[in-house]
Image (cartoon, rainbow, N blue to C red; front, side):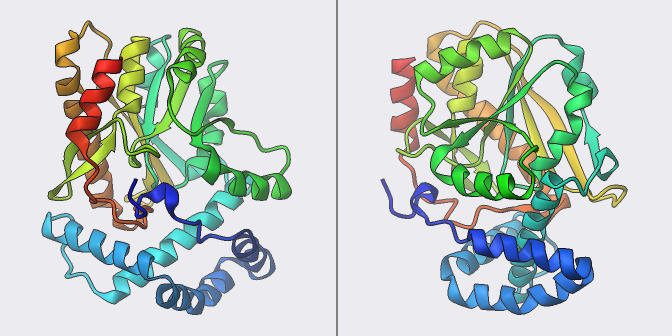
Length: 318
């Protein structure tokens, strides 16, 4: 596995740093927080070359693909990192009760809930998904369970527990999506619940991926959510959160259907996975074109990941 793979990268958002952001806000409000943060952002940009290179690469691709009209400059990288830190603060504020349902505009939820069956929701590292807890009443008795990478979930969970022990999101921690995990999730979907899986980071062992064009170049996307939806014979939707381009609320959450269950011959699985990955990539591009600073994958996203062999391997195992 490449050392550049996201799962090998040490988290640069420390417990101390996140707590410091929160207490600066508590003591001085949003204005003081913003003024204090800029020197920190510049220091962070200088100290962590991986982050600035990833940001520069992202904006260059965004610009060349026609989604970012301005020529990318260093200032855009600073603003990108600032936006990331500001969103981390929003995550903390969301779990500590500072936000309400009025801060989140939701598009497509009524259509999603019109069907009593459960399904797979494919999300991304954008926006503030912690605000989804505001939708609990609208989901009624139907649960939303989030699959998270065990190694990278522990740190943020500890911080949340210290700030608000009563806050709860139903996490299922995994290191990989195995058949055993799929069986455990089958009952959830059967009861009308939803399984949230991140769709913009490839599996730990770089397996089970396929290629889709994203911001002008082929990139690897995991097929785990697609395979799970196929095995469970359930609906697959995208669920992407960004800052609200209309400014009516702070954030917007978009639900879009990707696939409805129907028989798929084994020989057509790989073709289905590629089509679903491309549909997801197109929806992700659409949201980033409206809110470009919401991309929080600070690593080499477009690195080669031996896609064809891995997708075929999973298909033969399925």
